[in-house]
Image 1 (cartoon, rainbow, N blue to C red):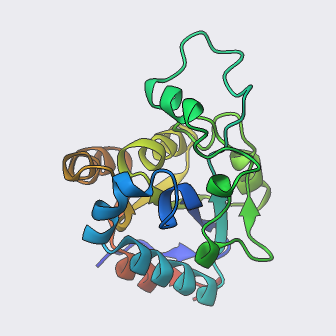
Image 2 (cartoon, one colour; image 1 turned 120 degrees about the vertical axis):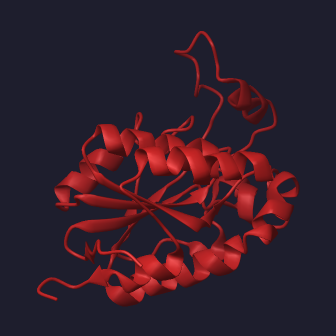
Image 3 (tube, helix red, strand yellow; image 1 turned 90 degrees about the vertical axis):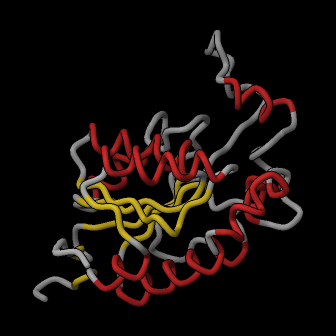
Length: 209
């Protein structure tokens, strides 16, 4: 249970990298993370989270990865994981893997930001501007992966002055060890709240409630 509430006028659920390469059975990265996604019931939990947020009238924002042949032309030292992603065309813009996973596709009224190239969905995108334009003060993070893009985006949110909430059962990682490190060490360090999907959904409030 949490005493924090999430007004629909000032809060936004940010879905990080809910893309085919991760979530679809034929995605390029899915074989490496599939077992851990099943372990945490990620698909089921995200389905419940998104449906609950929509039913409550909460703003939803999509923060997708996206790479192309010139993504790192201005970088001397490409991040190690991104070297492999570039080589194998993961999250490749214009291809199936970079498209949104069909059950979680954006709907009218959702925010869809520009594509981030590494682990921080704020860096080089319009995420901050889109949130500020709507008066968003509280951000709630879910998606992939626990220790990389979700955590990286959360760290930036804290630095940018947002109230930050991580959802422990709406994220997944490639290994149980990395997932545990995110949930037990990083999230309590950077997040104002670390909640389950159900606890968060119960704390959403419409203005005046």
